[in-house]
View: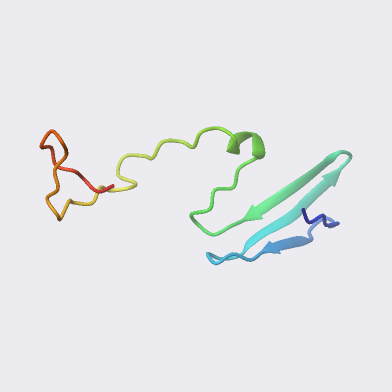
Length: 83
């Protein structure tokens, strides 16, 4: 674990292949540090207590099914869709 000391309005940059994630200290009070997080689209930024829950189900239309170009069929003769 990397431990850093930052003052209000100072930043930490995490470089990723998808773009930089920037964490800014927005406020510091007794026992509380307030952070702002900027990240590229596609990154989910969650508090730890929320990250441990199951991810939300995909919304309809968000991940479209791909047609089955091979025409493969399951054991009951039903078409097998690639997901």
